[in-house]
View (cartoon, rainbow, N blue to C red):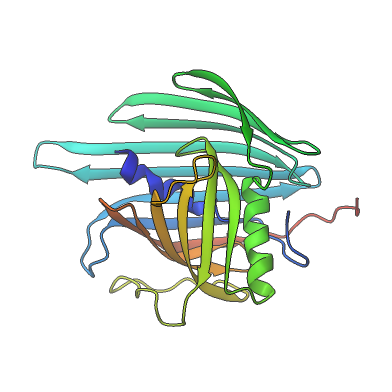
Length: 261
């Protein structure tokens, strides 16, 4: 089941913000499917709700999946994330609740960036722990801003480090590569594309544990990444299962008018 859940992290664990890069608040809905075939079965939906005020970002993500293993046995997963990230990316508080066939597990914590180190206090299902994360580790929104900034600057390949609050509760090392146009899979038949404003890049990303520096990625991601932070046409490969996510609805929101700090 953990292999299936890996696609949750792909929504945010992407990459301090680059010059001119700024994720925009939005609400995005996705259809999830198991596999990349044109007739791949739909297994659920995901909603990402990102709002912003002058204090920072508020992130909510709801993901629901159900897979029919046999005619009488279904595997269901519900995951909900609530997080708050400071405007300058120095502090992130979160609560994640996941339920597998009704068995619920909760993880909550706080990640803080100091002058030289990044500290995390996390209550895992197995008990609380204090972690010292690699210094380059960024909070979720700051990590996406960094990736957007590097892509805007013309970087074709680069590494990044991001904190994940859903799968491992730790830092991910993310290796990002731009892809050639046309490499991404097409949308499922009969589904109309959702118009997303702004520029975009087809990207490939591999995710490994940031502190362990494992040679083999936990999973990889192909997606269309927009300069607003919106993702579309995602394909996540864990080695055992492949999950796709396609944008079905989008509401862009106006950022607040905040004084410069």
